[in-house]
Amino acid sequence: MTRRVLVIGDVMLDVVVRPVAPFAPTSDTPARVRVGRGGSGANLAVALRAAIGDLFEVTFAGSAGSDAAAHIVAADLEECGVHAHLATTDGATGVVVSLVGDEGERAMMTERGVNAELRYEHVAALFDTSLAHVHVSGYTVLDDHSRSLVPRFIEAASSLGATTSIDVCSVGPLTSVGPENFVAAAAGATMIFANEEEALVLADENGVEGALDALASRWREVVITRGPKGAVVRRDAETFSASASVGNIVDTTGAGDSATGTYLAYRLLGGDIETALHYAMAAAARVVQGLGSRG
Image (tube, rainbow, N blue to C red; front, side):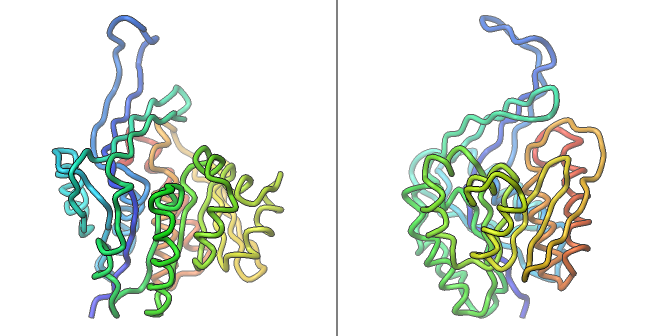
């Protein structure tokens, strides 16, 4: 029996825009534009599938609208070897427009569409004895409508002997929702992933070391990505670190998701933390060299 990794998250269409000339408020601005599958969870699932190969089945579950965007996302996932388990709901699929700056950093404008319509029943059939791991996107935790599902997902996975993980995803919504509410929903997970800014807010700390200490008191394995500074991991009171792979930065869209998915893949394959970090940093470096989450 092939073991399954289940990723639960937002179904999103990405529109990535990088202006190549000064912005013209009342006219046309030349730009590079990419449209395709997006969403933190879906990006992570694709990276995980690329690293884990055929040794595990990778399934992505979420709520999609009854529109062309849903078909684009589903087709892209299947093309990448990820099984798309999408519940179709009347309404619009989520869309995020990313404006990319000269240094590769981006600002995002988001319509979540029908992602808030996700129901436990949409994914319940995927919780069976083949399940090895469940990853829940932080956006599912950050949404008031879906947050209550997260403890149920974690409990169902744990009852089957599967490990679990959650990534924080976005510091703005985390601040609005309140770190204490995020912690309450995600507390039962095995692993947590956050970038440095998210980790400091979630832990209510001013430095990475303090954040590691605080988060490690709640989760067994804590992974904090630090952009050009690399990443640090705390597990069972031991700290590990890795430097970022140096390369040309065009767009950071999807880099963190790629690192998280790759790290998770190597850990599920039995790799040690140093090896998982090495490949995670290499994966992120590849993505930032191109426009959009595909790199």
